Amino acid sequence: MKSTDKLKGTSRQAGRKHGGTIAVFILLLIMGLFMLLPIYLTVVMSLKPVEELFVFPPKLYTLRPTLDNFRDMFDVLKSNRVPFSRYVFNSVAVTVSVTVLQCFFASMAAFVLAKCKFPGSKFINSIIVVALLYQSNVIYIMQYIVMSKMGIIDSPLALIFPAVASPMGLFLMRQSISQIPDSMIEAAKVDGAGLFRICWQIVMPNQKPALMTLIIFAFQGAWNIQAGSVVFQEQYKTLPTVVTQAAASGLARAGVAMAAAVFMLIPPVIVFILAQRQVIETMAHSGIKD
Image (cartoon, rainbow, N blue to C red; front, side, top):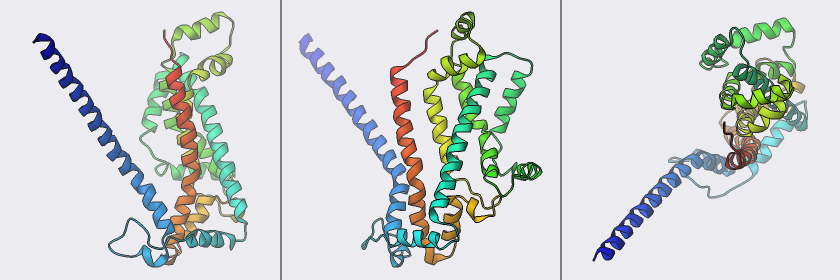
């Protein structure tokens, strides 16, 4: 009898465990579908002909899928004085420059703030936390005045320089580097390593998850930079700027706007997938213990 009761109790516990697993799976599946719904709607809307875009109530599918919206988007962009490849080159150049420079400066500054003791370090850390509260729109006028004094208005540098300094990236890297044991830094100093070597050969190789996360945020922000207010020459404009201009031409261009949204969505998604794989792999196979 005791063995039978024990088996029944074990079966009930196993049943509750499997039931909880199934419930968690269903909950995560529903949340995942809600997250994928905007992307799905964007793709469907980009494949709808113009007459289906304004049907009420809106449908979650298209009866006559077409690629005319994508053709119209390229035709509209090709009608400008600058070839389409120039806009793509500008966007790629600005995005890569901002991503590389932001990771470089944020990593070095975060290492100094996290592992180097100097007068005023706590005050600077407090300034970084306060800077997280301010969006770029709040300091835009001051940024414009500074860039005007520097003479970089109406040039690609006006898009790159303001985006290099990222309080969020600096805060993220500082919090991650703070988890590095001080004994590792001290051991490297005893062996004769300088701060620059400690930063890039000891600390940074252990910060791949934080670096990949920073790359995702930096790439996404840089890819969507709007250049209309600081860049006026057509040959310096980025792809999001001209796509926004083309999509703002009226309701007749609604399909073009959806096609442009899909086109602009592809590079950040690719970067996110590649970087996420590296983040998961690094976190699964690495660890630091004091």
